[in-house]
Length: 513
Image 1 (tube, rainbow, N blue to C red):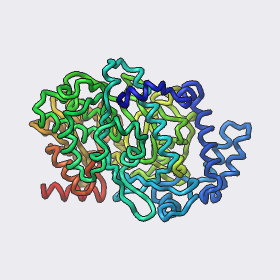
Image 2 (image 1 turned 90 degrees about the horizontal axis):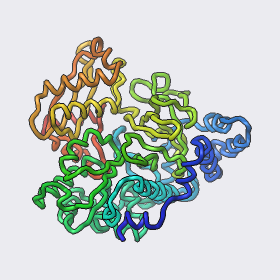
Image 3 (image 1 turned 90 degrees about the vertical axis):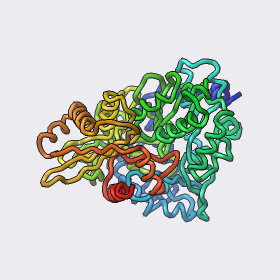
Image 4 (image 1 turned 60 degrees about the vertical axis):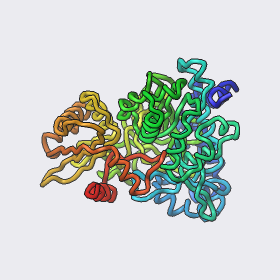
């Protein structure tokens, strides 16, 4: 029986799923933090920051005494502080640094924020938790109205290479390559492409072989980053001279996506289908599986509060972050029961991979506190606020989607840069469209929608934000730049806001293109 049917046939409704359904978010997270601290109390990090002393506060009658001690003892970390003080020792093979034992794997992040890639530890405990959360996610398919044939179908997983690099002390590569290579054999036997194709490190070779073999497979569900999945489906359709992808995969019912907001891709994706399918959002970062959409018809995702991760929420405002998105000393952090709906927060995570109060770089909005549901709004460093316009990636995604609908065009990629314009400021938009569209009309329409979506933007357009510029480019230009900087592949995504070195690289590439 293929993978989806096998998992559901086994009656997978894990204890953790029921626990999250019937336990308060506060209690789940309090328990998760205690488990993390107990496990890591004898590590070098745990001794440095007196985890035993924090654990003693769990017996206090004060509701947040343990959390206040946790914040007092442990400073907020970004990648540089965790790496420079702790994780470099893990990579050198030292055990019990920030998590018990040695760490065999490191996820090489896509590096959308910083100038270089990051090595994120992936412990055995994290791999186990990702498997559990992934299985819980697949179980939620029982909430969808799916035909019986779907459960006899396979899954196409478009990710990084399972052939990892070896440093001498550890293996490293895309998280998807690490976790796919660690799947149980009975699952690997039903997922596509084949293990041989999954090992390919050359992205173009992998795509070509998937296209060549696509007609042999019965695919019911796909998983991957929208941009690269779109490219793959277009090639399959062209190679086999199909009207749409359902001509070759009639049982295709769902696409599980993540990494970027799907809305800008929806219109283009719909055109590749013979009929509607379910689009299902996930929040699987290099640091862990944080949330997923648990039922149809939602834009939000449910946080996994008992999946090996303790979450903290830092209000994303001028009190806690500077104009460059850097967190300020003494920034306020809150537990899950202390947040407010419709407010934007930056996430801190402590995990079974030895990340502690780690600023993951994403910003989220709480849309349902009772159900612990969020939407991702952007990145702490991927926003524009040159003069107080406070423009988030979520604002940009929605404006582009609305404009694309008006012009009946497909926008697969876009990016924005903020630059001085005389004594004032301007936004420079680069929009990927394979076809014809009036640049000036598109510029005006995106600007109009941003004014509707963001009051601060509307105000600054009358004052300091002097001009909006827009250039339409073929999508191949965006993918060509990604390839030129070594970021081509299933888990990479184009940054929605370009700053500093990446902006310079992009502008230099455009001059040559």
